[in-house]
Amino acid sequence: MEKPNVVLIVTDDQGWADVGCYGARDFATPNLDRLAREGARLTSFYAAQPVCSASRAAILTGCYPNRVGIAGALVPSSTHGLAQSETTIAELARERGYATACFGKWHLGHRPPFLPTRHGFDEWFGVPYSHDMWPFHPDGPKPWTDLPRMRGDAVLELNPDPGTWTRACSEEALRFVREHEHEPFFLYLAHPLPHVPLGTHPDFRGRTSTAYGDVIEEIDHETGRLLQLLDELALADHTLVLFTSDNGPWTPYGEHAGSAGPWRESKGTVFEGGVRVPFLARFPGRIPAGLVCDEPAMGIDLLPTIARWIGAPLPALPIDGRDISATLSGAPSPPRPFFFWYESNELQAVRYGRWKLHFPHRHRFTDEMPRALGGHPAAYPMREIGLALFDLDADPGERHDLAAHHPTVVAQLSGLAHSMRQRLGDSLTSTRGSENRPADRTQ
Image (cartoon, rainbow, N blue to C red; front, top):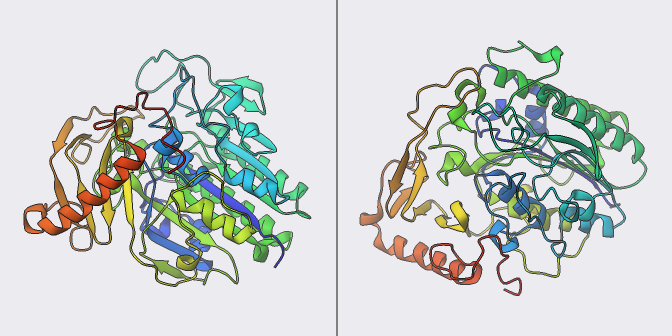
């Protein structure tokens, strides 16, 4: 088989339940549902961290974000970014002769040495960090400068209307596919929305009962345009299409936020609502149509999986992800642990099979907040959780602590966590220095 094309679509703050086939209400996603119908839908797919920069670093490098020195969300005053020594999916693809492009949100360093064109992308159009990092933040004034819209290293304009992002990024993606229909391409379409501030093209305003629903329907519509173009160019059967979100919904924004469905809490927490995200994959002839899989997987798995399908060698430096092409073909895989870091690289939880163990930490408490209106966030209190064990099969909402009833499981998962801390560090136990320093890349 010739080199397949790869389209990776990543949205921002779209909740697990914000796609029709995952149970979305009040808005429709027929094109995303088409991906699920013609491919696979994973119900236990995870972001490596419940926040932007870290989860994107994991997707593009196949590494837990603290391995590559990215924690939390970078801001306009950040001076670091993804190191040039790291290998991204784009670099693997370009080495195989692929045309590569990134359109949308980058958020892995806005200074020139860290931009997409230094990480394997032939071209880039978009925003260097979250588009709420501008002088008009809905939560009140922030010490941030004007927000740039960029092409390559050049600034095209400042403070663009949030409603222009989805259509603009989509147009770039459609152009790129047309220009490279006769050669293999890797397209990374990283929509800046539905992260606040919300906005849509005028054609989508008022389409649903909420501004959030309008945004999702526009993203779905633009996804449909891309799928239609692949059909028109006879590329659909030769293209791997992946769709996911960078983390769970930002529920303090109320009606301007999405839904985590049955899962507890939301973005910024390592409860399921913060890290479990939608994931769809279509690859005719490789991924069975209509497959629904509860096998856990994570953003770190995308690089090795894509590498397998495009025939690229894995990076020279160690990675954490695994090739899940067999899982996507419907084959069962052996259980493996998944580790969740958040605040300053503090390891806060680990999942293994049906079990999820939380280590003592403070967390945002968002489940019982008053419903915020008008795009302004509600204040959320902080809570503390002790050592707590949850059976995700019987208790998907992580409500019933079983640690006292299963000490052997607690010990097993604690041992796994200890081993990973020894390899990658932990801000509560490590004395390695800066939280943004990469872990030992030889391990």
